[in-house]
Length: 206
Image 1 (tube, one colour):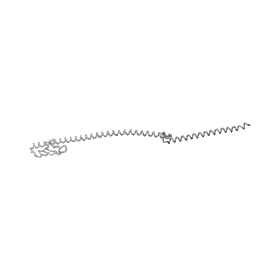
Image 2 (image 1 turned 90 degrees about the vertical axis):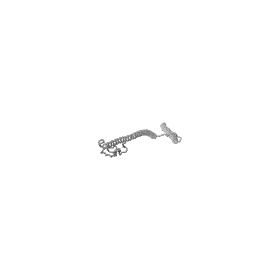
Image 3 (image 1 turned 60 degrees about the vertical axis):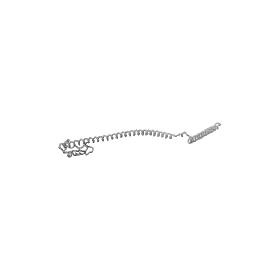
Image 4 (image 1 turned 135 degrees about the vertical axis):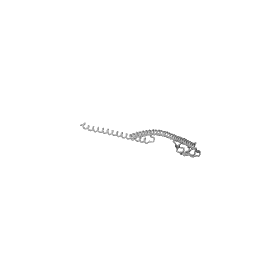
């Protein structure tokens, strides 16, 4: 009978003891939580102070997104630098090629000018040679005409002041005809005492 009466009290005591233990444990955990929260607050405050401090030399920690963006920007800068170097190389090559082309064009232009000068000289020489040949031929024609005049006057006993016609001396010339000036000049026979002349002033029979 006494054990039946004491058993409920034992359960009550045990229950109270467990309740006290859990209560104390709960309070201890709450204290630990509060302590950790306070430490976290202090760390956060210290971090903010360190970040905002003007004397702070170390960079603030970056988030994962910021680090990713930083890496992307560095890669982009590297690519741009590489492209800039390539463009500089291409520009240098283009400049060198342009200089070579310019030198080549200048050399070709110089050769063309030299050839033009040579052609002009050759043309002048050719023209002069042709002129000299025409002059010599014309003078030779005048000499033959003068010989024909003298022969006609001798055979026909004509005085020195006798005027002669072309048909009169033609039989004494080659092909029985008065030759023509190769330079396009016109011959004047004159009298027996005067030498025949050409309308071209440089074609003169000495």
